[in-house]
Image (cartoon, rainbow, N blue to C red; front, side):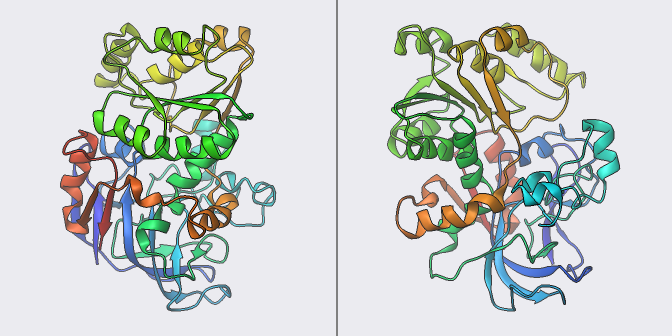
Length: 390
């Protein structure tokens, strides 16, 4: 089969690889009908995520048609149409029983490696390094789905792929980010970043009762999407100082809830801390550029909440922890527990509350993937979200 494979920093290729096969009674094989490139895939593309190996198949936002199931999979059959969560969960461990599926205790076969880096191992993830399991990803013609009796979401309506595909990751991720922000009715919510996860965090903030949503970015197309589809007020950080503008907009109090949907590769204009981060990552002395996180801590009102769906990798420094502590901020983070949310969010798609396809700007063939990675990373051609069709 054909698959998008990692061969090094900024080196993604379309390769011919072996078809996947059933390896465990709880496996399923799906024929991928749609798959997407995620912002967190760029951390792999840019070489910031350790333990990648040449030939690793990328991708963690797939859906498709079931071709084969293992003997223990009773909930799926050949021909079923499913969306596959990016996090792999056994359904039986301490954390799965608490619906903390991205913290599953048993799905990462390389748990000992992860423990040495993080203290404990999170769940295994599709297509996201050997630290997190070494599982082949979904930017391919076929995909092996471990724990298929727990993860996949069956689509039993005729909704097109584009309306349900993002239940694999970015819609639940934006929704969990808004939930983690502990939004109370009428709150002002500031969202750093206007990429795909941020767009769903904006939409979800309204669902949780926000009175005002402010989106921060510098890319005109992303800001316009936040205005048009998210009904957000916007700040272009190339034009104004974010802290000053937010204090002006909130009469000095600051936003009640702040969401960092940027993560490890933040940009900034004329900021000394951002220059410092950029230099450190350029010479391999650091893995994370954390300007957005620092800025959110400074801007959030006293006693507010900071929600961090943005992916961080290593040991970011120069965090204003004193400000965070003295302002009494609550911080909530985490990879998304997709299986906790995707069924309820499917209902919101089915009843017309939201059409997630609004984020798609590029629809391409799988073979176009290598160039699509570069276009997406460089934010060229108005690229906000890429969907690939194997």
